[in-house]
Image 1 (cartoon, rainbow over the protein chains, first blue to last red):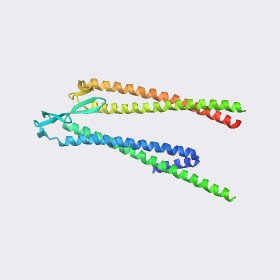
Image 2: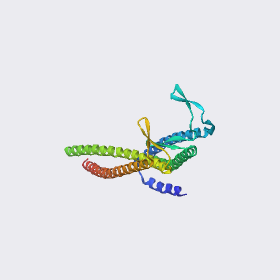
Image 3: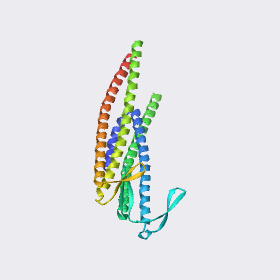
Image 4: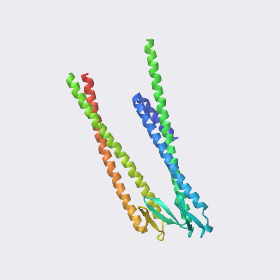
Length: 159
Length: 122
């Protein structure tokens, strides 16, 4: 309900603006919305990365210990390796810092990160919604202006 | 009469140019602030993680291609220091933005005055 009130307050202001100001407002909103769209995409990508790491962790089981694997040196060259520890992961936590964590805490880390990013996405989507409602309101008032102008022209034409 | 208008027009143009250059600076600073805030956020996340660790957890820092083992407490201090520094930078940028905002308002005022003068003259 509170957002509705907000919109009404905005609308009252809008009718006082002239066409040029409205146009400026409209392009500003459009720019902002574009930015939001971009940010949302980045966030989704980010979330995907975290979710991917989380899935890989899920597939790791304790009986992988001492299993032979092939470690990729490049995308087309491998060396044989042996898994010595299945309960020890090094995680990139940003700004060049890496931390060693066991399976449970690693899982927890990625779960937290996915949730965190999702939270940001939700927040952004909410703002985006109110912004697009504002934009719609601006467009409405602009149309009103145009109709008024047309009517005025008609009246002048008649007189 | 015409000479006068031309002179004012010239001043108007100069004013518009300086207004635009200040505007550009302003936008640059806004971008800079955005980057700083992003860095601050990242450091905050790192700090949160470091605070979750216990004394026996290993911490590494990436130097070029290699990971170097770090002391946990030292890492916390370093990240904390880095955050302080970035916060100071954000404050500094905010102050600069404020003064630029004032400059912009002044320019806008004089622009309006010049425009009015032209209107009166023509």
